[in-house]
Image (cartoon, rainbow, N blue to C red; front, top):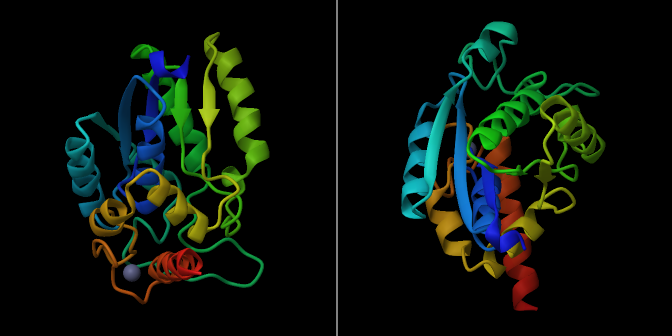
Length: 218
Ligand SMILES: [Zn+2]
């Protein structure tokens, strides 16, 4: 039944959302991607997302969310704010309410385009203190969106309970491990693929990949 339906993937061009794109392409008749421009530290993220969408032949929309930086200055958008995490606080890359806004805008666009399935790569396992990555939040928002727009949205979170190694495994099962490894951008320093190797995002990605490759061998 899903094979006949249309889906929107919230898409950043990183490992997680690209794995979600592969997951969606495997399940839905038609898939499109939406990327949010909120003056990310690296505008390269938008170009990478554009290229990946083109590689898979899916429609790609960039929505302007620059107001996020006006509302909540943070380390992802401001080069004068250091990327750091203090004990007991969310990391300085946290953008208050980001997933609430992204999923709401993706749903508005989805309804316009006849898509009720919205896919997001949020994950509670690596949750790092981001409250709007939690499963309870996504389920709650799903109900809210359905009431707000009188529509039967289904929010899908294929990575919700996976660790980084399991996310690599999923990409591999979808025949996309090499593609994801070589074409996605996760690094906070804006370096494609394996990245700078030193920032928290690179370390998480690298450790996950090594763990998965070791598990695969044994
Ligand atoms: Zn890096």
